[in-house]
Image (cartoon, one colour):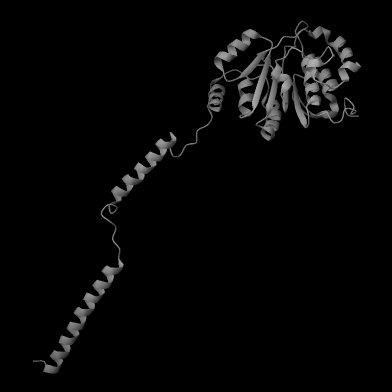
Length: 291
């Protein structure tokens, strides 16, 4: 039998241990916050999160991970992905204009010609205005049915390729070297029957890839090249990038060098030449071509 003093000591230790246990339990309960019944279930949390995302997606009419591309861009992607027709220009040639468009887009882009690459040019100038001038009315009608978003106009040409030499001599005369609006020019090379928008808009880029010029009776690009150069010189301020395709042919080669000027030529890639022509409005005494 244990002594009485030892029994009392054991009782004190037991009492202290029980008191300490209750104290610790009370302390822990007061410092731990339990989640509410509404949010305690992981399944409930997941359901609430998915519902919120679904509501946000409906508000934007789009999935939470998508960014909608413009309809015209989607149309171009589908067309060129499924098309088996090769554009008129090569990748190397297209890249020259594309680099300029990348810097200037959105801008005003005038294109002589309506072809298989027209949707591409219009899309690359997204947000800007791209106008196509075409000689073949039937072709315009066909393209409009397929791509109604393209802005195109019919243009008639009175010239012929076999007149190129005579027109070159005409272009060297003083009436063709005077810088003014082509619509009111006295030069035989200036195109005067274009839509009014073409004369009114300040063009940042001009592409000459038409009219037809590969046989003697074809209209040729003499007038288009001359007019493009005059539009660039006649703009109020700034510079115009002019591109001429098919410079492997005599007309495109000689007329681009004479009326767009070799001194303004920036680059040639394949059959494409790129010229950068400044405004002459504040420098009418500037020579027609840089010396």
